[in-house]
Length: 253
Image (cartoon, rainbow, N blue to C red; front, top):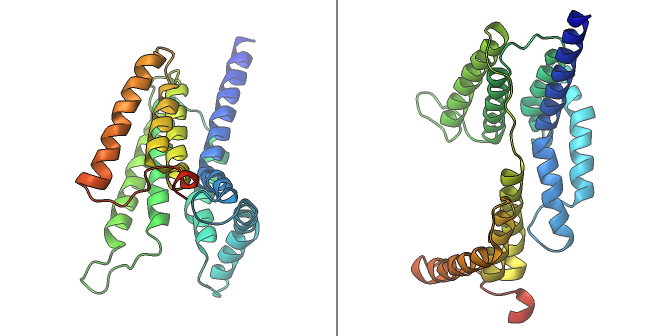
């Protein structure tokens, strides 16, 4: 009975890890969808949410399989950016997620850490896929990113393999509150800098990031945020000479 419970616990852990890898495989698409929501309100530039969803769904379900079968049949065509993202980044991570369901993970930290590093390497390979490669002995703009990306894929695969072959520590508890609010503050700043200006965007972004800690003292956080905002307002337009909007668009107009 104890052995049965052990197998059940292992299967549950593997299922959780596999679901996490599936979410990681869709992370760029999810991020672009969240970013595209700002275009509805005039924040940022890019495709609207409907175009993002339809583009990535068609790439994942139709475009990428079509490109694979086309290359096997000798009818290779230039793929779109969405299709390349599915082929280079999402599909390998989906394959890893499926394989994880049938594996015995001895060191979860090594295995999961290796796959996350692999995801970063695959994303770098996709991001450099439209850059020029080598011409003869001369390096192109995409040569170094592809070399380092390929090397990181090999190293991360070795780390993940270590997690399957050797005993090691399980996954430690990780608090998502801090990183979550920091990422939200960065995203807010990127979307709000044009319509709201530097002063409002910087101050509100700092307060959002401060929400990532239970120990935040809001009076002190507001004072520090105001000082940092004043420093940014002096640094970027006057010291560095960067033409950034300072105040909300509706006040300037």
